Length: 292
Image (cartoon, rainbow, N blue to C red):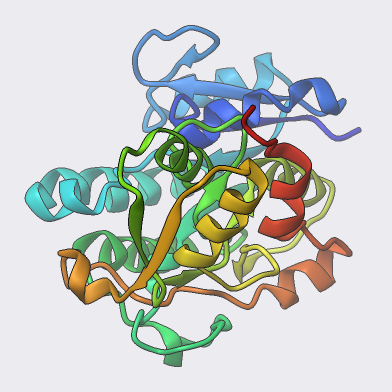
């Protein structure tokens, strides 16, 4: 029988949203946090004994490491703190999971890719080329996790969105389009990614929990989209009067360390799982309604 999934660092945006999908399945996500929080188990993931006790107590069959400093600005401003969270911690958890002989999924990032290579990128090393501290640490941590734990599964995660997830690109776009006082809104048309819904991520993790494989895989949505096209989709569904002006990233005062194109080809993972996630357009059509 498949056990539950322990989310290490599950109090953040993605973990909190994954927890809300528990009503949809028999396999539950269990969230942990270093500090005492509502609906979270207090856990220092670097403590082997406490982690082992938690695994046994809650019938856990898979660990998912979400804990990280994911803000590009924070990583650039405090690289040593980012090094501890985004490199040292993954190494420690990978070693612990290996000793406990429990499957580990490590959440990496689309930011490991060279953002100046156009088009959806496969997992090839030729496509690697992070442009900021966050991306560099994520790629380095992929390597150390694989070295410390050959059984680990690394998933390169894109921008994740959901009506369940605060501050996702979906919610930010809805808020900006709904409440902006500007008649014309400038949106980058040359920034691309492969967004994935939290609901589909939950399905993917539950499918992995029933499987047994390792390696490094892209885990993005099936659609390579620009930020501008996302806003266009939402604007058409909201039915409000706004003008979107397609603008280049360089003219919006966006720092050069923000990559242009981190879209991914995730066919290898989805062929293995026998699952295709929803596109952003399909999801938005189901969940975004017009404003009266």
